Image (cartoon, rainbow, N blue to C red; front, top):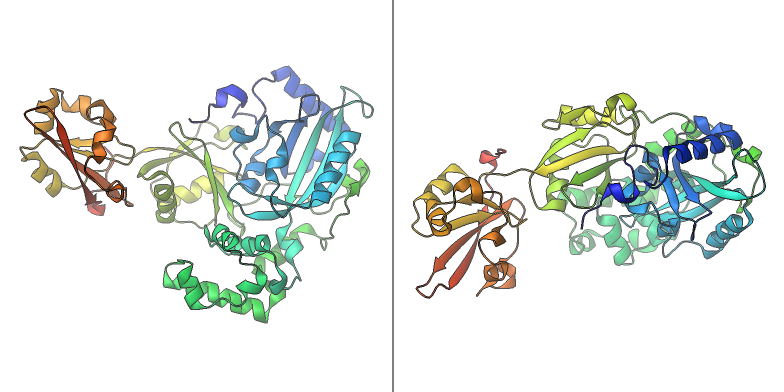
Length: 466
């Protein structure tokens, strides 16, 4: 079942829906009264309610989504322990829990995991927020600021000593989308990474050949220049921080110490100059929001490929105004070219790029439909969502419906879904990328139906939205 934002999350401000406007303003004012330096920080942020059981999240900002790939709709009302994973240090978790229990500020480094399974080093800073107009005593909320310091944390380490999560971080940085999780499942740590050969990459189903060659070249560079594992981005981030990163102690700290952090981001990232990954957040019909990270320079063709892989359908892509900019909230751009895509990225001001998708009904080609129109046999074409995209006259006569009443309807309105597998192997019921399925329905004198499934290759030349 799809996410229902109206139940517990308001997309306009990131707060839990059950909080009144007055309460939201009260929380914001209290936070800024206690920690005025937060007004100039542009980092991942959460607010949790210490007065409720299990200290649930009641606010998440756009930068949190971008860093973790967890949509706000999914995490409001939950405790943030979902960021922990196999290699998260239990001692660090205990120090966070103790600080919460004691109502203290905290500055720690913790290994967390994004929704796609890739780990990252998180400089986690937490502040207690007290009762209205108080700066001590009873704690009502906590505000947590997170910064991904993976690149700085990795500087100077020896690749052969990397753990599985560290190998996955390196792969993710270099754009091997989806490969990070495969390496973790195959137990490939730094030692194994440095011994990989072309045959090993073939066995891991890394395609095409150019990607295998690129990965082997990067592994070779690791042997020669281990301190440059993350390339130029490492230098850019060091310049940005204005100081060499130091691993924070796992201890309680004062708000004065936290306010003197030198490497907090104080303005939105400029996508036109940004070298680090950006995040796309996709809304498709009633499905849960889906997020993924990729390079800023992604082409429309590559974006479409990712979306087809996720949804098994061609889609119409629309960008709607970012949460980060009030003046852009009602702006809509149809993404039909690389220029449109780059405009949407720039207008997202370094935050998540919000894409609203709807199914694109695609023709299978004029020659195919002309042939099907002349068949005496009732015939349908359906897509991977089991919706009818074509019917011939024979089928219309069989069901005694007009074409407009049939098209885009679920096929089960006319044919019970179990019949779609009668006499067929399970492998026949697959939707290969960019393909439809032709269904021929034959009625016997007794009224029974037999079904034949035949894949129809997608015709790029007929790509058009109906």
